[in-house]
Length: 289
Image (cartoon, rainbow, N blue to C red):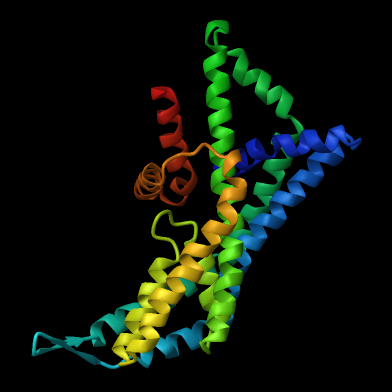
């Protein structure tokens, strides 16, 4: 319900643009809802495909890690034991895949509710806006309008800008992993794209894991390529290519505050906090300003 409300809020200008082009209110609302539904499916489908098709290959890759890894520091050799870490990672991957695949029937029902709610909210946006604005005293209408602009810009930054950057990250990462001969390039590219929604850290988390994997296997050059080359091409380049072209539509919320809202939202509200956390922070910044 929360995601449907935020998506409908963001789609209101799209529906108005379609109506201005001659579509009826019902047809415009249906087209905007279809756009939201397809975008939501596009975001979740790669995760399901990875969990269903590539899980065995990922597990085999993790299982291939050596049980111990020698580290030479200042002439002293230390042995890092990876057996327990490897077992924990494999167990987590299996549990995550089981939860994701087991939740498919519930997710399909939630997607249906999501689509119905978005359509209803988009179709009745004028009445909903009048109801909300009507309870605000006239002297504070300018404050309500400021909050309205901040909410819309923040949602645009979270949904549109992050999704566009994630798509660019997927394409760049896919080319990178194919070029360097990784056995599961699509899976790694999907993970890199999804991690783009994690502020500040982003795909760097994946690249650090890949570099650690190569180091554990004794391949220092591959670790450096993943860390430095991947860091520039995957973690940095999509931001440079995409964000400047869409930044004028956003709030300009500092990355540090966005990160605080993202992490705080997840820790306090769960998955809803991915959107609610940064949104609350943005509203606090607007109120303080």
